[in-house]
Length: 305
Image 1: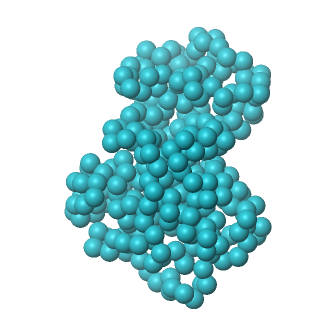
Image 2: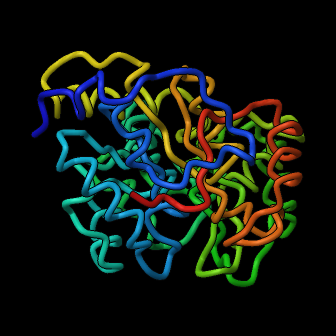
């Protein structure tokens, strides 16, 4: 458990930082003294769905060794303990983080508030532990009181438009949807697969009522900050907190809305848009931030100490 500042505050001044491509941060150790807490994305930073990103894991381990606190914050639609088992299998060292907060944890809280109501689930069977012990009787969409979407039933073959008939039924019944994973796509190896956010956004665009459980929405950040405070045993100033992620829509915009700094990793889901995984195009990086109308405080190709 960490209780002190991650680094002596006077080791590195906290002057204004520009996230233009010409000022990519090469080593995380250069800016680590500015922060006590990292809220790090998991899929796209710590692993790619197939294997751990060992340079990133090493950087997080070193940050913790200097007294910092790391909370992994993920849009995985499963409880944190299931996420931990998964990343254990990818050889992500437990020494690289203090705790995990998932959108599955936030979703469980939302389901618990609706105890006794009938729920229809859109998503793979592997996400069913999200409902355990919550008094959420399963039902088909035709008889449900609300819907939880955790993903596509088969993300190796299906696309969001395959769910238009289901969406039409939900719209006719005015069913609220809880989106357990606001991500649109995620990397699996070097391929992109669709996530629950792609279906939820399609439903919302047609007038459906959607509650988003994960990033970029505030509840998951509040839960992560509460977890970090418990780990450190003291209040944490927002200007000593850094979010790390590879998604404009979830990580960057979520951090900006929550009022904390963001380190944007280019070798993630936007890698192909940016020209190359190892050598992104400077103009493409500038353009993607301009299009999103939000700029991170820091940019790295990959998290490296």
